[in-house]
Image (cartoon, one colour):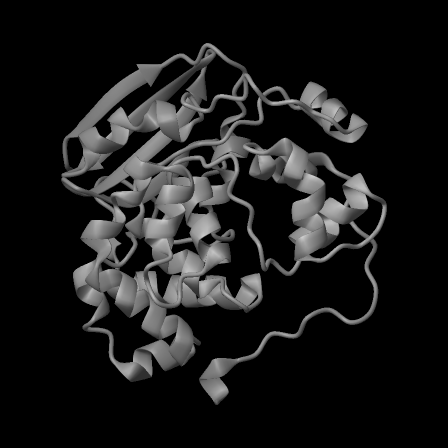
Length: 303
């Protein structure tokens, strides 16, 4: 059994551990993230020091963190930021009555920051223009084939995401079997070849960080925003081009459907907290009416 490292951190703000970590989980069968029936949240991750496993539990008003592997200390050091300690909403104004009410009801809603970019690139690119079901299936396949087994006593079947250097080794038939089309495959390969430079985006933050991500062919506004929201808790990164979010925002704040342009217009007064507003709406808003057939997944493995 590998030796473990531990730390206990007591936040000085209301914390909902599950809610702040939820954006990091890619479905209930995510090989890199799981929560056990006993309430322990496990994550496997790549860090500058190597692969590590992190286990978090809420005990007596504090977070007890235990980590294993070469990346253990990096993961422990990053616990406060990942749980929202660096999130600052002191200048946030809730202009709309619904947002004021949601903010009152959800004081523990915070934006966490992993501080790491690469582990977010692959799942974010995989989610481009496909259903969550398709993207999560691809993510599971790639992690299990090319990821690193989680160090320590992690639950069975946990893997850290594939490292950049392994991406070039993935043959075409594996991409195809995983259901990844050529455009997403090219974007992941291109990002892997400059992965060391992309980590600087988490230091630049904000628009500068998102612009750096977008220098990679195949990473556009939507993908850059999805990475930024998680890597540095970017409160203003709006997922423009999302299939669902404009409808959610429009129905919540205007009572009607809007497109991307309409969404950006209604969110304009909330800058630099536009993503924060979206999170409030996603967490507790009224949702949107459902009309017509649902989007049908495309099984690229049969093409």
